[in-house]
Image (cartoon, rainbow, N blue to C red; front, side, top):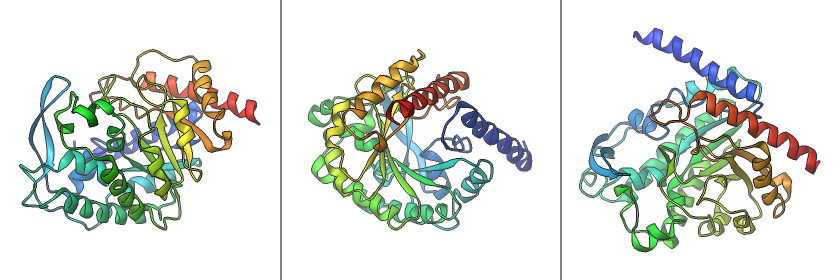
Length: 333
């Protein structure tokens, strides 16, 4: 397909994704990230310096993951056109997401492949933070309302089996874990990226999604107290899927933060009743003032990126999410 034809078709598909979310009743709209091959790898492809050469095993499958092997390149903004297109095609609140430096560093730096480019993981994370800070600054000028940093790697530190005895089905996670050192480093990087941004800033901490399963388990109690230092407005967490957040985690939520409660299970094939979503959210509202709570899916659906959920499944779940939100607004008005 010619480049101009591809762009035309992709524009149509992104508008379709926007209209789908609007029709489902969502208040906050994204572009569906349909221009990205992957929420993390798209950024790495655009800055360069990475190759899929590290073998690893994930849930019993032998794969090759991308690692950094050469210095990344800064330069022109990476996602400004995508964000501008989103803002132009909806009148609702808009959100645009970027991967966090800590997530990328944990997954993409390895001592066997990366030291010629970056002697340590800290050197790599420092450069990532500089590049992402520059990107966030220009994205904030496009008119988007919310910039979100995605960081499931923070949630890895909630898995006591992983951090305690190294139990995992993902070879990439077999490493030294030190919550007292790593979480402050991750938050410092986030703060550098979002400092003085004139938009709302959110942090998304999921348990990773692969083939309707999560990569790690555990509630959020280990990491929530550290967010006291985070210069963000809201943290988006998972509560619908088994082995993720518990409502009483919110007792540890720092006072300056709102929370996005994931009440939609994106992994399970079943369609939750609206009442189940309401119950999850109401459990949070029994702990926090309801004005601090927003509702969202646990994570992204990623239809057609090798993930089982279909667009129809995602749409129906989002419709039920909107219905639950409407009922809860009436209850707590």
